[in-house]
Length: 580
Image 1 (cartoon, rainbow, N blue to C red):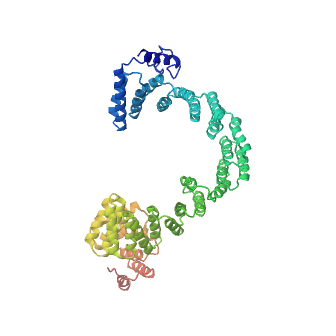
Image 2: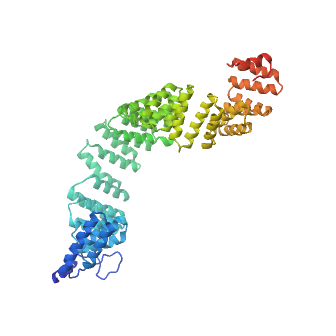
Image 3: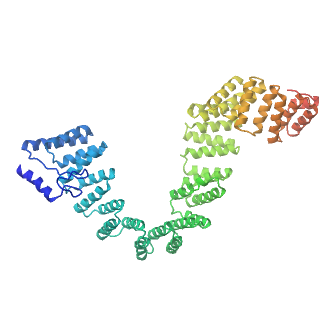
């Protein structure tokens, strides 16, 4: 066993047991400590082997704790067992015990300084704890062990850059290029160093050479233009890109780069023209186009930003006619530009290409409701619910369409479906219960109507539509007038200057016999809607109880001229007195 001991002593002499050079008695905490083995008996060797393979089995079975215990026992018997150190370090690393892992790996590389895997593991540890000086030296060792791995040179160079050892980093990149030839990584790395050193001429040198060697290759032009543009040399960037464009006029990336340069020169018209040119090429990936369009969003609601995004999205739909996303974004931009009718068929083209995007279906239904296309809402709603049966909003929208067609039973069914599916969405629940309240009111079931309105308000006390309708129906019945007044007043606070809401409050006040206040509010309502027969008739009713019969009759007649044709209105005009 003397030979075993001698082996480790000799190895320590041949390979300094540090990542940084150190003296044997160095107590610097950054130093790697020499590990010296002890003589092992034959029995010890057998036990170590047995424990090691047991540990590997436990590790394979993902019993990390048992494996760590066994590897620790290996090291108690054989403190210079590099494989045990490495395996235990990996376990400690997975447990985020970085310091213990580091110590084990530093010992492992002193025992087996030629083991590439141990050095790589140590590099990962140093990188994790951001110990850059040690990391740099690890890559020196890795280059010594395996000089045919280009990534070791580039990693060493990056570490040197982080230490601001720029000349040494350049030397590392040059060493990489000498052995493996120039590549984008080495050229880019050197450029960054030259720019940090303020040497733009050297940063551009390699790219200019690449262009001379292969003038049809686009990428060096783009990189060179970017270097010039980012260093405030816009005119040089333009010349480079114009030269590239002569060789490759159909390269969309060149036009995107030109757009960047023109934007930096604040020539926004030229920038936009270059974007349009680039977008027209199908070769430009739609993901890139969508990214650029999304850059306009923060500028909304600026009209120029909206119109620009709209035009670009239109071009996208032409360049990518088989991609549903192209029509979705075009539809979105039409909506942003308030072109709601035009957006509907565009969204439907998107759905024809891909009907699995629920959000597009919902947007179509909302737009169709806004255009009073109730039959189409019902048709599309039934189709989308066959694809997405658990969508509460879709059920609600179909319910609204049926309600608008006075098909009350169908409306109730869909509103109730929405409630059963949307029980966490308070706003949706409030709207659905409101629809149920309206429906039961049409069926003259006041009890269920009131109960539904109360549920609507409990889910959203600020649902102005519910507050207004519920208050108005109570006023018509002459019930709970104080509650009706409170709700109507709140609805007007939520949505001021809304004629129908002001009319409701005026009518509640009328039913409370507060005629002077009622007159104030009905005049507000008429100020916001002068062509309503209902408002004119209510104004006449209020004036009558304020003892201004002549003016009351005048407004009743105005109501008739505006389309009012109820029996009660005829009686008021003929008898010149209020009649319900």
